[in-house]
Image 1 (cartoon, helix red, strand yellow):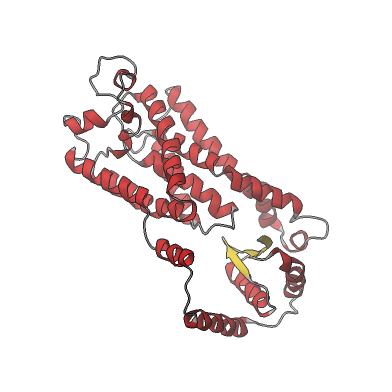
Image 2: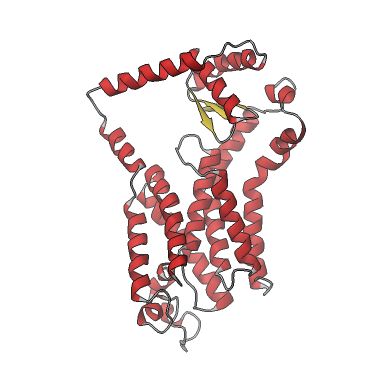
Length: 339
C-alpha cells in the first residue's frame, strides 16, 4: 500500500478514488484528503490518473464507481464460501476482546466494592500500590511479595463519572487494539502503560491514586500512531478524539480539574507513542522514498500557503510534540510545578 496524494478536501479525495476505481485501481481514503493505493503495482498507473484528475481532464466517475461497488457487493453476497479468518475478523470489528472485557468488568466490580473510591474500604487499601497509612517504607508491601499492587491501582476509580469516562475510552480504543494486534499485544500495552505510571505517581503523590486513565492514554498513543501512519491496519482514531484526549490531558496537568494522577497519564501516553514508533518509522521511510515536495511532484504545484507549511513542517513532527508534552508534564510533576 502506498500513499498517492493528499488533497485539500475529503470530497475531492473521494472523487479521485472514484476515478481510480473506474480505471481498475483500488484506493483507500486515510484521514482527511489522504489517498492510498492498495496495490503497489498500481502506483505508476495511479500517478497518471492523478495527473489527469489534477488537470481537470478526468471525467466524473461517481456514478460508474457506484455501479462497480454495487456489482462487487452483489458478487460477495452471492459467494457461498466464507473464510474462517475473515468471518472472525468481521465479527470482532463490532465486538470486544477478552482483555478489554476483563478490565471493564474488574473496574466495575471494584467500583461497587469500594463505594467508588472510599479510602476507608479494605478494597481500596488492598488494591492501592501501598496501603494509604502504611509504615512499611518505600513500596514495603510490594517488596514483601504483593507485586499485584503495581497494577491493581488501575482498577480503582474515584466516582462514577471517573469510571464511566475511562470505560468509554477503553471500549473505543481497547477493542481496536485487540482486533488489529491481538490480546497479547493488548496485555503488553496495559503493562507498559501502567507499571511506569504507578511507580512514577507513587513517587510524586504517594499511594492515594487510581484509575484506568494511564492505560487509556497508552492505548490512545498506540492506536493514534497506527491510525495515522500504518495503512496496513484498520485503526480509526478521529481527529476529534485526539483533540478531546489532549485537551483533557493538558487541563488535568494544569490542576483546574483538581488532583489528578498526571504522571500516570503522561507515562501511559509516552508508552503508547513509543510502542507505536515502528509504524511512524515505516511512514518516514516511505516519505523519504516518495517525497511529496520534490521539484516535479504534484504537491509542489498544488499545495500552497498554510497547507504547504503544515504538510512540510507541522504534520511530520506531531508525535514528537505529543511526546514532549507528556515528558514536560512528568518533569513538572517531579519538580512540584504541576497542578
